[in-house]
Length: 391
Ligand SMILES: *Cc1c(COP(=O)(O)O)cnc(C)c1O
Image 1: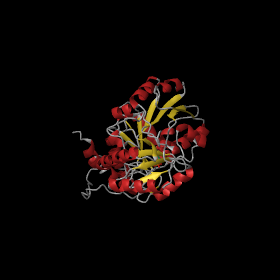
Image 2: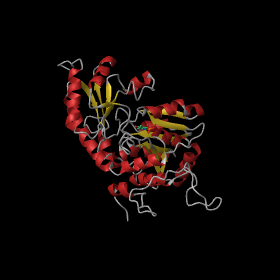
Image 3: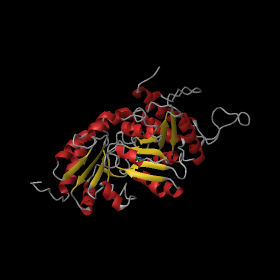
Image 4: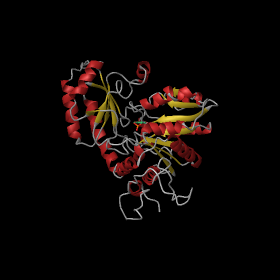
């Protein structure tokens, strides 16, 4: 019997505990497991290699992406490291310019050191991928919607081009969640999440996961997961599993709130641009409508302000919390140029369109009227040069 997503989120990977009947899957807080004879065990030998709470989480998350295999890591970055570990010196990766800052950093400042080469393209046109593919190209790395400008990449078109050239496609699905976008169904080979974000959803744990239907890739990923050891402990796995149970409810309300805030920002004089794939004017809107169920709850907007004026605005917000990260029940906001993307060189930042006046919102689950009221008071007390009436 195959269950639907909301049912899987609550049940998959978590049978009732055989010894006690506990309905909540237990935290097996142990580092090692007794072997009945040397080399003979009950499926677990050492907690880095695997433990029951992690296995429950891996099965649960895989099921949400409609997949066979999930490989959990201690953070989203550890998951990214796990995927890149599939490569060797001389291999080539194609990715997009508008990318999570930490991904950019590990590509250009860590894996590049070991001889892996990266080419960054504009995600707007899938055909630029075909031109960037070389004989050594092994991976196409997509992030859609992207961070922080919410650019949309056509997963099906890109994955088809990659597949014809024997290149594997990985999609960082953190912003969309398994609820809103299904990369494997669109032709991707691997899906990655920072479970720190929506999947856990409560700003209280770090985690990452890689999901695939490819048995050989899964075996390699499990090998690197164990060999490198950036693995989540039982308590962290438990918390993330608790998060998935309400993921569907949370994501719908996140989207409801985000849509109201986009409407508000669109009408505000001091806001020069709103970035949200749900807007008909967004350049990726048509593709987003095709490949997403809804458009998520990260919203970026631009103020026509200097760095100093933008900083003043961030001081005036009271209910919104100035913090890195996203996907929490609690509304967060950040200033990408000095926070999440500070590790990206200023010229690169400028070339991808991350201006000093850019603010990224992660819309939480508070009453949206309170969130809007807070934006309103902060915008009204910040000295923002009004756009000229004739503009
Ligand atoms: C946060 C994030 C990551 C990194 O995850 P951590 O859990 O912080 O290590 C990777 N990709 C995206 C899109 C993210 O938002």
